[in-house]
Image 1: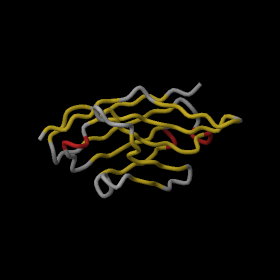
Image 2 (image 1 turned 90 degrees about the vertical axis):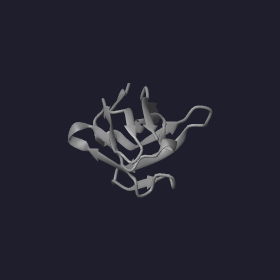
Image 3 (image 1 turned 30 degrees about the horizontal axis):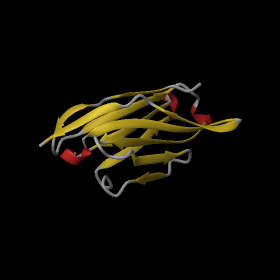
Image 4 (image 1 turned 45 degrees about the vertical axis):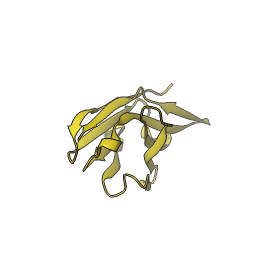
Length: 118
């Protein structure tokens, strides 16, 4: 079983910055990719940013140039640096991992609320 524990959410003013963290309870060499998704009220969950095992990254168009996803293999942690945040970034942010455990499994964190005030 893999546990993903997010932290770092909260209230931030528009134009400010926030960093989310997701600590994984599995050795990184088994993780294929990790990502951040978000879900705003009344909307579907959407991909925000993804990082592969080889550190390749992919971003939603709405956050390109503002958000940065990174990972620290020594700490088994992935980060989402959120810069120049906007009110439309308000959502619950979920950490996601796709893991190779003889078969491919996917896991989700419990979510962390990010609220951007205008």
